[in-house]
Length: 235
Image 1 (cartoon, rainbow, N blue to C red):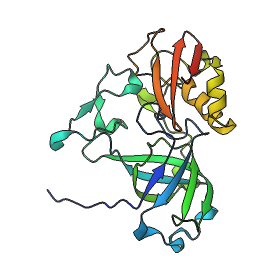
Image 2: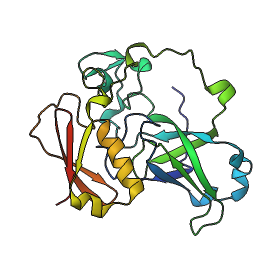
Image 3: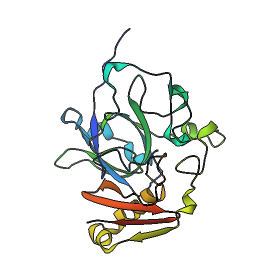
Image 4: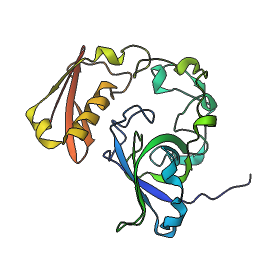
């Protein structure tokens, strides 16, 4: 089998040092910001000429934390979106466990700074990537061809962030302890609220007394979800 080489052109800086809490799709938490920093070889401002004319970009990136030993692939996977108890063909899912660990995300451009100490930097919002994720390519989002209002989503079309079960509207009460309010600015508080509203717990967890720990923006955020109430704090 012929093999191909991919080189990381950049990496992204986000508030998520681990996978836990990262939105399950791009654009779900619009308040999340990320900084795309290019590798030294690609820090040429000319490569970004014209990008300011676009509002969104596609990121092709590496599922660097989802690699399995042995290089074996499975034709079916259990998507968390479907509760983790139904199998679907890998090509019908966005599971990270695929022959080539390539992710695809659409993000909104907030700013482009061509001259920083790290070279050109693109600040985006709505990313679903861990801090340090390698990026293979950046392409402009073209509304006239990339947007399909009549598209269908098969079994994954569901208003619930957890798939089968809870809907986001049910998580209507948020209790942020003073320690949370003191730790984050208004933008990060808004993003944290969106993250918790999407219920980042594993789909098979529904323990009202269990306390979860989510590293976020340099803090260890603890939270508990009971019925429609989310409580969060920092110790």
